[in-house]
Image (cartoon, rainbow, N blue to C red; front, side, top):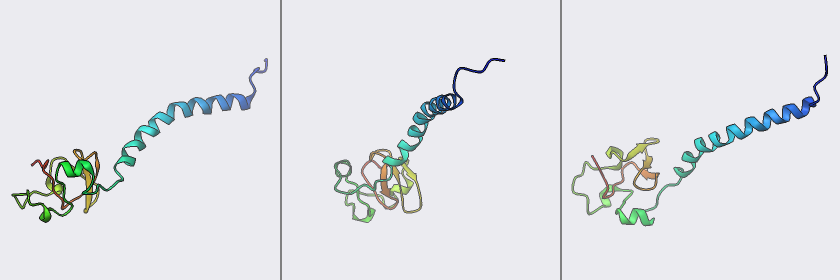
Length: 105
Protein backbone atom coordinates (compact mmCIF):
# COMPACT_ATOMS: atom_id res chain seq x y z
CA UNK A 1 0.00 0.00 0.00
CA UNK A 2 1.42 3.36 -1.02
CA UNK A 3 1.70 6.19 1.45
CA UNK A 4 -0.31 9.32 0.78
CA UNK A 5 1.80 12.12 -0.66
CA UNK A 6 -0.05 14.67 1.52
CA UNK A 7 1.41 15.15 4.98
CA UNK A 8 -1.10 14.44 7.83
CA UNK A 9 -0.60 17.91 9.36
CA UNK A 10 -1.28 19.56 6.03
CA UNK A 11 -4.45 17.49 5.57
CA UNK A 12 -5.66 18.48 9.04
CA UNK A 13 -4.87 22.16 8.37
CA UNK A 14 -6.87 22.06 5.13
CA UNK A 15 -9.86 20.45 6.88
CA UNK A 16 -9.82 23.01 9.70
CA UNK A 17 -9.47 25.90 7.26
CA UNK A 18 -12.41 24.66 5.18
CA UNK A 19 -14.53 24.22 8.31
CA UNK A 20 -13.63 27.71 9.49
CA UNK A 21 -14.61 29.22 6.15
CA UNK A 22 -18.02 27.57 6.38
CA UNK A 23 -18.67 28.39 10.05
CA UNK A 24 -17.42 32.02 10.12
CA UNK A 25 -20.30 33.56 8.11
CA UNK A 26 -22.86 31.66 10.18
CA UNK A 27 -21.34 32.84 13.46
CA UNK A 28 -21.21 36.42 12.18
CA UNK A 29 -24.87 36.30 11.18
CA UNK A 30 -25.89 34.98 14.60
CA UNK A 31 -23.87 37.55 16.54
CA UNK A 32 -24.72 40.58 14.40
CA UNK A 33 -28.26 40.99 15.76
CA UNK A 34 -27.13 40.94 19.37
CA UNK A 35 -24.54 43.65 18.97
CA UNK A 36 -26.88 46.26 17.53
CA UNK A 37 -29.52 45.73 20.20
CA UNK A 38 -27.11 46.36 23.07
CA UNK A 39 -27.43 50.15 22.90
CA UNK A 40 -30.02 51.96 25.00
CA UNK A 41 -31.53 54.74 22.91
CA UNK A 42 -31.35 58.26 24.30
CA UNK A 43 -34.19 60.74 24.04
CA UNK A 44 -31.77 63.05 22.20
CA UNK A 45 -31.12 60.46 19.45
CA UNK A 46 -32.37 61.86 16.08
CA UNK A 47 -34.73 58.90 15.54
CA UNK A 48 -36.12 59.28 19.07
CA UNK A 49 -36.60 63.03 18.65
CA UNK A 50 -38.45 62.46 15.36
CA UNK A 51 -40.88 60.06 17.07
CA UNK A 52 -41.04 62.12 20.30
CA UNK A 53 -39.79 59.14 22.33
CA UNK A 54 -39.83 59.52 26.11
CA UNK A 55 -38.33 56.90 28.42
CA UNK A 56 -41.00 57.88 30.97
CA UNK A 57 -44.38 57.87 29.21
CA UNK A 58 -45.88 60.20 31.81
CA UNK A 59 -43.58 62.94 30.46
CA UNK A 60 -44.94 62.66 26.91
CA UNK A 61 -47.50 65.47 26.43
CA UNK A 62 -48.60 64.02 23.06
CA UNK A 63 -49.79 60.75 24.64
CA UNK A 64 -53.57 60.78 25.02
CA UNK A 65 -54.19 57.23 26.24
CA UNK A 66 -52.51 56.36 29.57
CA UNK A 67 -52.56 52.66 28.64
CA UNK A 68 -50.15 53.23 25.74
CA UNK A 69 -46.66 52.10 26.80
CA UNK A 70 -43.73 50.60 24.91
CA UNK A 71 -44.22 47.23 26.63
CA UNK A 72 -47.72 46.82 25.12
CA UNK A 73 -46.82 48.12 21.65
CA UNK A 74 -46.70 45.72 18.69
CA UNK A 75 -43.30 47.09 17.66
CA UNK A 76 -41.70 46.25 21.03
CA UNK A 77 -39.86 43.01 21.74
CA UNK A 78 -39.10 42.40 25.40
CA UNK A 79 -35.59 41.44 26.49
CA UNK A 80 -36.28 41.68 30.22
CA UNK A 81 -38.79 43.46 32.42
CA UNK A 82 -37.33 46.98 32.13
CA UNK A 83 -36.08 47.20 28.52
CA UNK A 84 -36.72 45.74 25.09
CA UNK A 85 -35.98 46.47 21.45
CA UNK A 86 -38.12 48.62 19.19
CA UNK A 87 -38.16 47.94 15.46
CA UNK A 88 -38.97 51.57 14.63
CA UNK A 89 -36.12 52.93 16.74
CA UNK A 90 -33.38 51.02 14.92
CA UNK A 91 -33.81 47.91 17.15
CA UNK A 92 -32.20 49.76 20.03
CA UNK A 93 -33.23 49.19 23.62
CA UNK A 94 -36.12 51.30 24.87
CA UNK A 95 -37.71 51.57 28.30
CA UNK A 96 -40.71 49.31 28.84
CA UNK A 97 -42.57 52.23 30.42
CA UNK A 98 -41.64 54.59 27.58
CA UNK A 99 -43.75 55.91 24.70
CA UNK A 100 -43.41 57.40 21.20
CA UNK A 101 -45.74 58.53 18.42
CA UNK A 102 -45.23 55.26 16.54
CA UNK A 103 -47.09 53.32 19.27
CA UNK A 104 -49.25 50.62 17.71
CA UNK A 105 -51.75 48.47 19.53
